[in-house]
Amino acid sequence: MVVQENLREIQQKIAAACKKADRSPEEVNIVAVTKYVSVDRAKEAVEAGISHLAENRLEGAMEKYEEIGGKAHWHFIGNLQSRKVKGMIHAYEYIHSLDRGSLAKELNKRVESGRTVKCFVQVNVSGEESKSGIAPAEVLSFIRSLDKYPAVKLIGLMTMAPHVENPEEVRPVFSHLRELRDQVMAENLDHAPCTELSMGMSNDFEIAVQEGATFIRLGTSLVGTESTS
Ligand SMILES: *Cc1c(COP(=O)(O)O)cnc(C)c1O
Image 1 (cartoon, protein in one colour):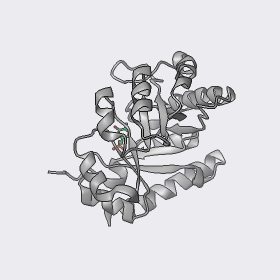
Image 2: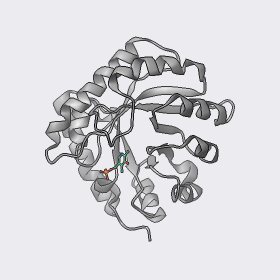
Image 3: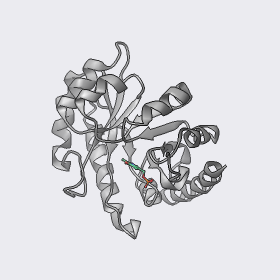
């Protein structure tokens, strides 16, 4: 019952952060990042009431999908090679790491007809060289250029903040992403409603929620780091 206890604590923190920012906790979706844990722990998360699960690699992830399948909404949050899309797209409803036109093209080509894949454009707000993502100045033109891929629905922006001791330091990263989101939203693009913000991890989600996160991605603090071997 590890997950249930963690979840209760996290929900209290979300409620407090929402109160500070005058938001409703219902706007915040908790995505459990199960990359460090076993299928059983992922199942425990679903039983605790988590309906969004995320993986950042395909190895190991498909095993969880086979077992849990439609009981959860599946999110892909890692670097995605175009040649891997074909083998995984049936499982994933959300991609948080769209960072290039060639990937959008491949997703559009491979997603089953009649379906769309909900994508976040990953933005490298902090400008760290080690991080993937589009530069903030390029977000708008990048998103405009994706209108030729009707099966790719741009629902929002995603970022990873630098890891810092005091999460207060990364508040400007989150507020910058929110401003970019608002700029895209103001364009009223059919292919890019861009209403969502995927930001905040175990160490900084309370700040992210205060700054408008609608999807927070929690691994360690929610499902732990139990070894899968
Ligand atoms: C691993 C990972 C997370 C979760 O990290 P924790 O600090 O364990 O909560 C969130 N987002 C991405 C993209 C990740 O790779």
